[in-house]
Image 1 (cartoon, rainbow, N blue to C red):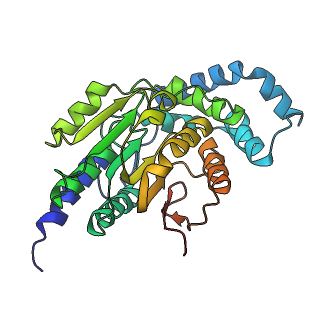
Image 2: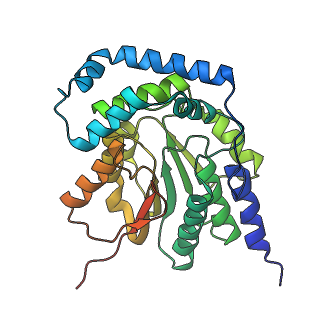
Length: 294
């Protein structure tokens, strides 16, 4: 079999940002990890003591999907579940995406270039930058790096406080875990580690509501990882019309337990978007923005 330099290079980048192309088994949780997880859970449940009591008495008036999420987080979250959140902050990877999601992202990026869809690539909510690093690598290896930019959009200060109750409880767990406040400097260092911190990488720091409505440009690929309803809806409202026909919209949090799921559904309904959603895994979905039928 002939050696494929492009594929080998992208495999190396994908391996680097994701901590491996195959799933690696995790060692059992230590007593210290479980003790820290239990303490974190107690702090969060104390903060939402009123909601915990209402849940136990079945007195919270919320949609069933939200109630299911809240029961899981406030009543049934095990120490092992919280310990996994705490392990997220391990420096072994620059993205939380698994192999399947990274491969799908890589394929969408390649198709956008091969099909000559006009525009840049953008990720809103980048954590340590791994997905953007892979997107920039695809641009460069396919010779599009001088014509297309990669936009890295994040607060670089953690997740904003959401409005919905289920999102707020999950936010409390994540904030206590300290997993999502990654500085701009750290993300830039991660790009530099792969030799990909060049003029084609543009950083847009700040809350989505402050930065995205004013962004001017054209996109061939838009990846959203804003978690909450407000963040996701703001990003779609601000950027959807700037995605070219044939472009890709990738949703990282399309799962009923997170507010982004409802935001995507509400936006698609409001805009009468019927382009089919493609499932990547239990959380990530995408669609292509297809031109209307004439």
